[in-house]
Length: 234
Image (cartoon, rainbow, N blue to C red; front, side, top):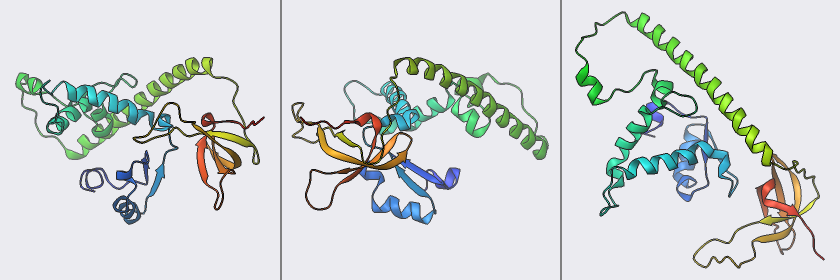
């Protein structure tokens, strides 16, 4: 609430990866209070939040530059410094910094402030607001065009490796991949469960499936098409 909502305003949708820290009663109460909607990702499908996952990699590398080799427990001390460095850095795709897209201006480093000798005079607020709004619109348009070009280029190379798109219909029987997790996890444990029967499409190549090999209430899961294979049992 303090770090996001009161700084940037309330959100309409909260997209999380299903972590217990983000699906508890506190978060549920916050989402209800803001009249928003919480959406959880399909398990084992990190591509749905690819930008966040890529940021985690960049963030870890950035924080690591501040830490000493003999002390790895003070990462939270350098968190704000790493965020500042990321917000002032140029994005490789859109060629603009996050602060330019969010705030309409570049962040200045201490060295840049020391080199400045001229004193800017205060101008009319309305004129400044118009210039800022125009600059932000221009930045967003440039970023969107650059993102579209990069996305098209990535799709071109990705589609070269992609096989024909699979389609499933209600009633189809499939095996579902569910890797074993926890302290007793082993690479030799069978990772396919089923049979599962397809109930309906959940959108974006996801499907609602129902388990058939259990007694009592049947388990239901939403899975991506890449995590199921056609059911076959000799």
